[in-house]
Every structure is written in structure tokens, then in C-alpha cells.
Length: 353
Image (cartoon, rainbow, N blue to C red; front, side):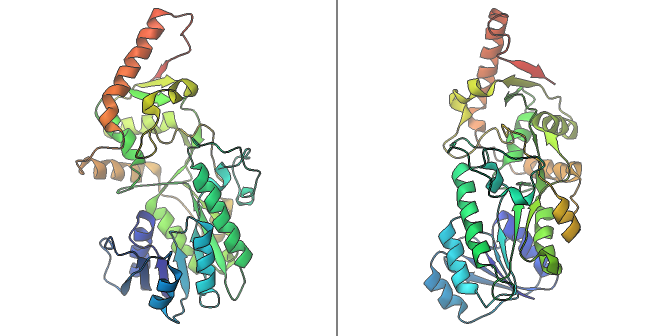
């Protein structure tokens, strides 16, 4: 197949490029040319350097070419999806959009396990600390609406995936490395909230496989699919697994979320910190993707062990590790407070391990 990928050098898109080339497809990627594609199997790969947001430049580069499939991995705003509709309507066998489970998590109420038909539930009041990204989820909802309005069986067939937390070696968000690095240093872990909220991750290679599988199943046209790991865990269970895989004892010190939110270390100017503390249970139905695409996820232990070893070799710190001393000082202050007033502060800190 002739396949175009808007993106191609990112975490998800790079894994998809490798998979499609290994399957013998002819792949073209559209990037701004700032990063080169990672190591890819020998195959037919064309790299086009152009900013996808500049539709005139993109039209000039693509000319009148048609594609069996177009993957859009970098549409974050509705105007980007609108320009894609304008450019590819009548010129593509399938248009595949990378969405997100955040389209559900900006809702005031969800029913777990969250099924694909909950994407337009009433939105919550804007919450800037939404761990799934409030504005991000709102904008991705708008992208979806543009594409569903344009969906046509012949002129513009649309499919999309809604991944949850995508994890594995080289994850640019470094979510797992945040916790792995702290487990490895052997010191107590500061855990906001109870750590009992359930969530799912998904291995990067499973996401790439699901994107590729959409091309093989005609029934996926006109549908969106959740893609997540089959295993469900709480943050406490996740941290205990890291302890088992690293051979390090895990000592968690919990602090109520409202108390934690008032502390300076609860946020970081360069991004999210204390990941996977979802503040609300977030479990997603996989019934549709299993039925239509035959999806099965890689066991958590397998890819997490691989991820731990990859990060151990990098020699870099996770986001916020420069403030690790502040975390430990905060833990010590909580312990002193609890010891000083067992009656008034007994609920301030709890430990598991």
C-alpha cells in the first residue's frame, strides 16, 4: 500500500513507520525536518520536510498524489483536521486519526469501563489540573467532530484510535522513568492521594500494531477504538511491580491530594509530575477492538522490564528529579507532624510498602 503519515519521527509515529515498512508498505512521512526518522528496517521510506499546518505548502509538496491510507498522528487542533479533510477528501482509501482517551476524561461523569460511545458526554467545568489534559481533551474532541462530520464511505473513510497512557522505552513524557528512578534510589516515594485509583497503560508496540491492523479490517471504517493494556492496576500496585522488577523495596508515603496540591512540588514548569495519579478511576472497554481487530496486549511485566533496562542505560534524570530533595524533606515534615499530633494530623500521612 502507499501510505502517508503526518508525523513520522515521534514516539507513536516512529513505531508505526517501522511496523509498516517491515510489512512491505511504501511509506511517506511529513515532518518539519527537525528530526530524522529513527532506525527503520530497509524499505521504501520517503521523508517530506514541510509544516503540516501550512496547507498551501503541503499541497505543493504532495501535488495530486493519492494514498491508500493517510495516518494523522499530529492533529491537535480542529483547524488542522479541517485542512486534512480539504486536502485528502477523494484522494485517500482510509483516513486514520490518532485521538486520545482524554476525549472522555474531560467529561463530568463517565461510566467505567468507558466505552467508545461516551465521547460526547457533558463536559466538566474547566479544570486546569486535569491529569488527562483539559484543553488537550477539548481540542481533540473538536478534531474528532470535524472528521466525523466529513466521514464518507467512499470520499473520506475515517477510522481512529483513542490510546490511553502510551508507555515503553524512549517515551518522551518519561512517565515511567519518573517512578522508576525514584524506586531505584531506594528512598521513600511521595504518593499524592490514596494511590488506589485504577488506570491502564498501553505498550508502544501494541499501539503501533493496532494502528496497522486498522488497514486489514474493513469493519473498522467509520469507527473509533479504545486502545489500552488489558491489565488494570492502581498506582500502589504499579509501584509494587516496579519494586519487584528492580529488586528494590518500595516504601510509599501518601498525602491527601488537596494537601499535596498546595505544595510547590505538585507542579513543574516543564510538564506533568507525579504521573499516573489519575485522581479518578479510568478504565476503558476493549470489547470493540478485541472483536474487530483481534487486539491483545503485551503482558505488563514483559514490556516494563524492558523499559526499566532501557532507562537505566540513558544516564538522564526524570522530570522533577532535581527537586527530589524537596520531596524527601516534605515526607520528613509530614512524619514529624504526624508524630507531634497523632490526634489532629493522623490523617495527613499514610504509609504502604
